Length: 329
Length: 153
Image (cartoon, rainbow over all chains, first blue to last red; front, side, top):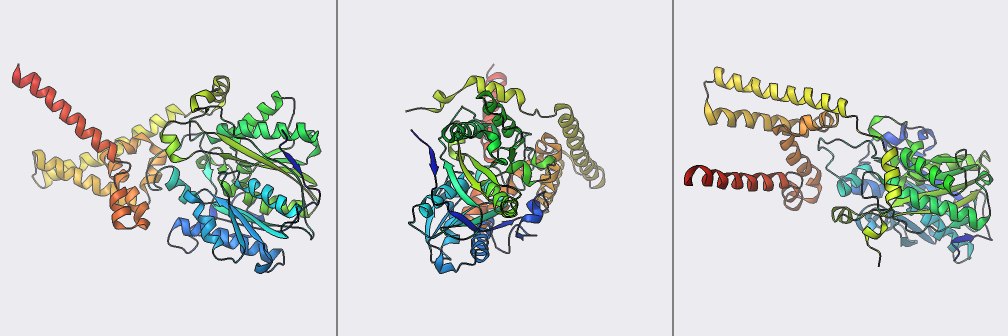
């Protein structure tokens, strides 16, 4: 069994765009985000519509940044956290391109990159958009409690990122290249606390990372950065411990998008989460650094907690998943 | 097929438990105590006002005080203040009747986007529903016990 794919034709990420809400824009990577919003409703009536519009804007601007016309985009691969991924489908109805809706919770973005890079590398398509989004308020009402309810968040909880990111993968052009991808598997260690998603996802992240190192024969220091999606502070620590146990030390290279996105203050506790977390960080800060050649080779690994509000209420544990994609400048 | 029970890895769960951050108990208790106390003080203030100012007494007095407190809880929820109080005080602002008002008003505000019938009205008791169900059920139980204990014997 092999789970790592190598892309021989090196699909290029020719353009990217990110959009984020007020809280994220004030965070440590805020100045790299292309579109920053003052209002998380984005001029819409509902949070779901706002999320969809954010995704639409990200895809549109990414296409513009890549100097492509809308008609040149073959397919949009996108996903989000809402039931039946409505943010993605409703954003996609504005485009004439094909559409593939995907769901891997917060690991959706690297799942999209893997599928997109495969389609482009096989020369089946020339330009593919990969995107994902999440919205704090729409996720809260679906998974947790009403916004105005006066309840306390436990200290291991995370804060869903309001934002969307999109990038264009193409057969030719200039930009960072996608070289390899390791497909994750679903791993469940029996964590049932829906507030502790970092712990639920860390096992899957460690497995994917370990598999990637073993199958590629690379050591952690082959990468300038190993970026996990939204493990948060606690989950990151567990990941480092688990990988260390298997003989790989990623202490120096590892960063977490969830830890990176906010100036950690008390109300976010462990940091950001959500499908938009890794896509916003990747399509802003990481892309900028790759283009400037300050980062040469990175591994981005979004992590997802595959729970639903129904499975939580029925007492099921939370399986996790993580896909890793290696990108070179 | 694997079930959730087959997946339980106790070593891992214990390890996670050992490094998870703990809730700061003393701080939470202190905050809950003083905020909850202030809410009760406000309620008591209204009680005195209605009792000595307006000459009310008995059931009438307590219903009016409850009504005022429920109004205040709902009003502050509508202004978007009560969730901030709740975040700070925890149980201190959940337990009093103002917290109950908050738990009814907040989902009905949130789900207004789904319409007045299937949104506001249907979702109004999403949070408060269980409290009402178990409150009524336990009051019936206590009533039966009271009847058996004091009327029959």
